[in-house]
Length: 619
Image 1 (cartoon, rainbow, N blue to C red):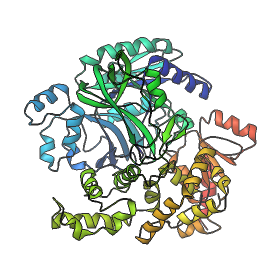
Image 2: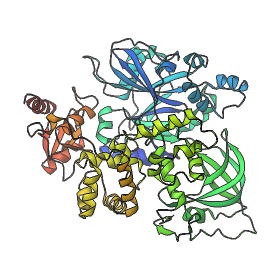
Image 3: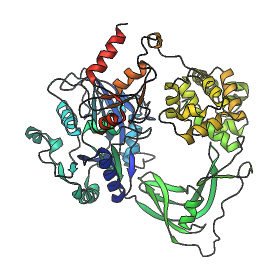
Image 4: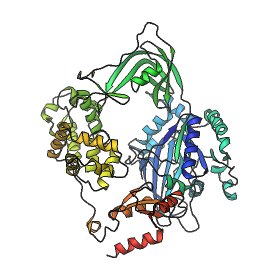
């Protein structure tokens, strides 16, 4: 189950704008749920027939670490549920503050915060060590693969109640807000459950005061929270709004005002990223902010520096936005002797003349050492090719020794030369060999997205592969023939993205890397759909564009219906447009059904959809 990030708001005005915009999209003011954003480790628990089958960390959002053995030791995590259901449960594992302070006192190298200690505990090899740390667990989302008769789940409230009755610990600090006060938010018998003893209700006009109260109560909690999560209560409306490639459109994180400290800017340097983008960084006198020592602060671009009127030697206020990203908030005391900062005109690494693109500067030299270094680090990272035993320290050593310069060099390493380097024993070299050889079996989609080509990320790769371009040759032929419009025609790919990707794939330097990796045995194509789906009879949705809305009895979650469509040759889009041919409409279809009727789009209900699928299966 994908675990996406959340969009963020840093002020009540930003949150109010999101609430208003969401209501406008839906055509009415829905019920919003407000919950505490727990500052712990996100986890997904999978239960089969009511028994805990596996526990997986968030990882990169699509693949995480299996920590089932350690999670079994957490007392809040039920090993067997009250009902024999198949369910995926999202939640947060955290360490209470009292326990964190006690444990941290005995550590040779103390942890900066409870979240880091909780994450480190989950990664321990021996489960008995994890059991010695009093981790806690809160459940906040559930996804049933089937819903027993008489136990319908149509709202977030229903799901929370279901989770509590299954045996999960649910955070009691939550609220429900809409245009009209939400009366009787839970059944009478729910009041007996501790999880629902402190639920607030109110109108949207009460939301600002409620958030102010939550902010004031933050210090009294037994655990750390770094904000609030505001989301739609109605699950069918969530389906209607859908997702971006980064976050759900039906939820947002309201981040508490970040802690700040005062420090002085020692210098401003620039860094060259893997795409050539030049990023200025303020080197500041080390200062503690929210349990972390900050000495480097990203300044984004020239316009950001000019807006701050920032100079070397200025005394500045630095925050950690969202309690994560260091940022210069304002200049408190300017350095009267400093000259305005002059953004460089040439690359600090290769001396190429920089190019301006929009608000940013770029090094245009594809052989720039820092660009190539960044591409290598990106390629081997766990979120991309995940080449084990090739961490940053090892890779930097290979770069420093001139053993590797660009990505293809990894697949023709001189291991005899490496054996002479410090720290490279026979065992480590064998492990490194095995990891690199294993990387040649990574699927095409992973390889292509890991090359670090600007705008050619996992979402783009998924869209073009699902549209039928299942090999690098398909894409290169499209580029060579100048058919960029074919990319633009794919729902979800815009004109600028398509043009940028085509420009990059046309570069000789990119072609050279692809060719060398192909010769090294990496995957640059994928098999087509299973034999049955390739038959003309099975491809009943070929050339059709489907939008899905509403709730269904047989497709929970709705992605199951999307898979049925894709496996039979169709494409699935998030909204009704001029290219949409069909609308699969469940209960409470809402505004998308109205839009489809106006556009003359064929509307198919669940029973008709099942009939069409069954007819295919009988072939």
